Amino acid sequence: MNGTAPHRTVIVVGSGPTGLLLAGDLATAGVTVTLVEKRPRKISNLSRAFGVHARTMEQLDARGLADELLATGDTITGLRLFRRLALDLSTLPSRFPFLLITPQYEVERLLERRAREAGVEFAYESEVVGLQQDDEGVDLDVRGADGAIVTRRAAYVVGADGHRSAVREAIGLDFPGVSVIKSLILADVRLAEKPEGVLTVNGRGDAFAMIASFGDGWYRVMGWNRRNEVSDDAPLDLDEVKEITRRALGTDYGMHEARWLSRFHSEERQAPHYRVGRVFLAGDAAHIHSPAGGQGMNTGLQDAANLSWKLAAAVQGRAPEGLLDSYEAERHPVGKAVLRSSGGLVRLARARNPLLRAARALVSAFVDMAPPVQRKALGQITGIGYAYPAPRGAHRLTGTRVPDVALKDGRLYEALRGGRFVLITPGTYEGPGAREGWLTVERWAGDRRTTVLVRPDGYVAWAAEGADAAVVEEAVARCQG
Image 1: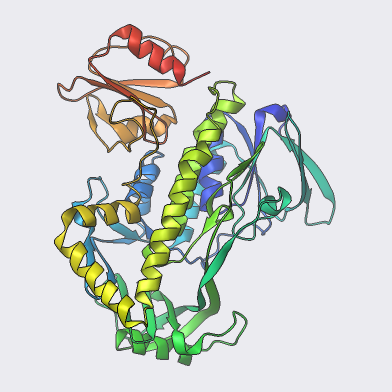
Image 2: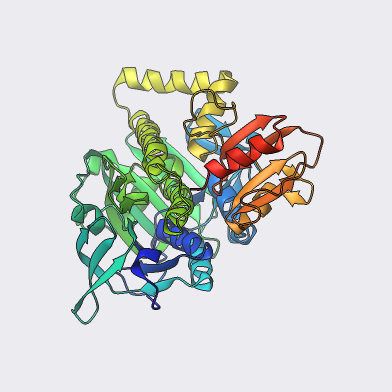
């Protein structure tokens, strides 16, 4: 670990999007980070995630990556969940009022580059085989490619190592839940006919299919056939993929030449806790759910954005009491809500019961007619609608997501790129935080009089109307121990 004292280090396990963003944030903040990965170094093109939602785009914007990622895919402003239920993403109060269709490996490529540039140490072909912790740190037993086991010590360990998390197992946490869809198919294929849209989704009778473009002539197909639910290891050929697609979409678009075929099943599971002592869980290690709404990768990246700045403050001795506990307090309810919403969509989509089919029609009609309901659905699916609990008596903005507001010298998400708190004030501020370098001070572009202290993850830590310098200094000081 480059000779750095263990109490100043963090080990992140898992080099998927969640682990990469988290490790990159920590290293950017000056924390020594090792990223442990069981697989050899390779960004796989076999990932399931294909959609990047607005809130994730905002977080990537705060890291200077959003515009580059945009260039790798196409955007859609309408999200159709059932035939009669469509959500208009163009109304989102965000710089990114759309869903970006791009493969997960493009997200990983940018996040890995950022992590390397920030100084993250990568340990590939390294499998976690044991974990012990005490009041001062964590010992992680790691087996390398040569079979030798090495013990690495750090102040904290984060398990971002997927739904079969070795870290979660090592700390003795259950992963309760159920199987939602018993048999899904995935395939990468070529098509003789190009679909009309970037993302084609529909369900008909007992079949469902989705087709998304890689942008290079290959297409990802995902689907299921309720009449043929088999185990994950059952053989899969192109003829079956074509049949499911024709059932669901009415055509297979001249599907041919599959380069990859696979089966999997979809589960809903959530760990009862996201923290045990000095060990944390994030992403699929903490929660998995159905692919409905494309929220999996996005939710994991939000976990990482929430946890990274808190861990950095703790390692550097700046964390106020209870800060690390707030990670679970804030993200566990979000994970539960995502399980509920994505699972509900799948159950309605697969409904056989006439009552459930009627409920689906009613939901579709009600959402179309009721703008508040549509805004809530949009907020949940895209991530921009979630807020964190605020103390009693706090300003109404506390805990809410801050949009990319205009500042006198730019915009908020540019100011967040330093990974620091941002104080937006109608006046000047030269107090604590600004001098020590963990606080960026900005002024409103207009004549707004609210003073807002924005956390590094883009949520309001504190706000007040017409606060004097002493009140602002006190509020800023409370954010750092």
